[in-house]
Amino acid sequence: MRLVALVESESHVCCRYRLTAFRGALASAGHTLDFHALPQSLFGRFALGRDLTSYDAVILQRKLLPRWATALLRRRVRRLLFDFDDAVYLRDSYSPKGFRDPKRAARFRATVEACDLVIAGNATLAEEAQKFVPADRVTVIPTCVDVTKYPLASHSANHGIRLVWVGSSSTLQGLERFDSTLSAIGRAVSGTRLKLICDRFAEFPGLQVERCPWTEASEATEIAACDIGIGWVPDDAWSRGKCALKVLQYQAAGLPVVANPVGVQADFVRDNITGFRANTTDDWVRAIRTLATDAALRNRLGGAARREVEARYSVEAGARLWVESLSRLTTARMAG
Image (cartoon, rainbow, N blue to C red; front, side, top):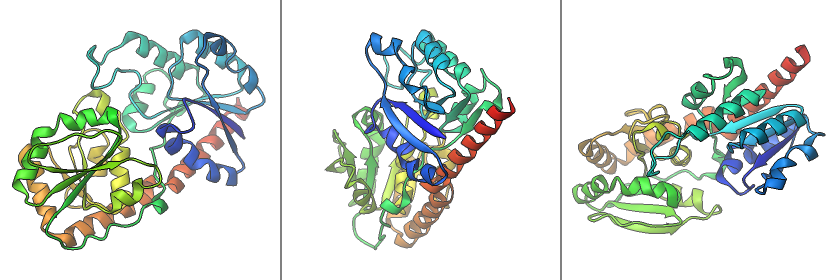
């Protein structure tokens, strides 16, 4: 099957992790995948799809187009797929206007109803899509990581523990809401440092911060040089739709993770198996102290996390789901 993805850009994190990563495996299964940038101009939107008629399927990634543009695209292409990994039908956690947005919701419904297949990053997102189309037109393919890019953390005994958080300027807003707990950890667990891998940085009183500018080339190695991954998100509707990529990255590097159990973080982080769940500041301090004083425990939990990522959230695992979904799509089209 000849596929083309309409994306914001090929360098965008969603494109890299949810499409580009699977390109080789799709090719091995007999599929090709090209990329086209979504047009921004009104003229480009009116022409959308005219140059895509030779493809067997078009994947619209994440973008909610005006309903008239979605309708035009649907009429011009053979099959239309929608891939999304956020609660795009809502505003995000940091919007001063609140979560609900009738325009986004209407565009989301129109997009889902127009598609032959909807690919959701987790069950919460899939359930939202299933409000508008039959369940067999929606499938879950989680965001996956290339485990081979991540060296394993060493977890040697030392006198100082290094926490790690990776993200962007936009998601750092969430961590800044968590400042009082981070400061409490720094005061309670002597020698603790926080490595921020980001394009912007913040300070937390009582907790030493290491500034590590993000680069795609160094990201995996910088994560693996740490001891514990941390994942905190606001407990709200937007965050429950997140796919927790950073948690998977920590786990791919063999790090135990401490996270609040919101959305899929509750699935990825299990107490005393792959890390610890934490809600209150006391929970967080207790979990970090426990891991900081026991290198063998960090090694055990981090190893279990790595094995789970390999089995369920690796590029290989995600590629199998893509190939199966495309096979069902082709079969359904032939039967129709």
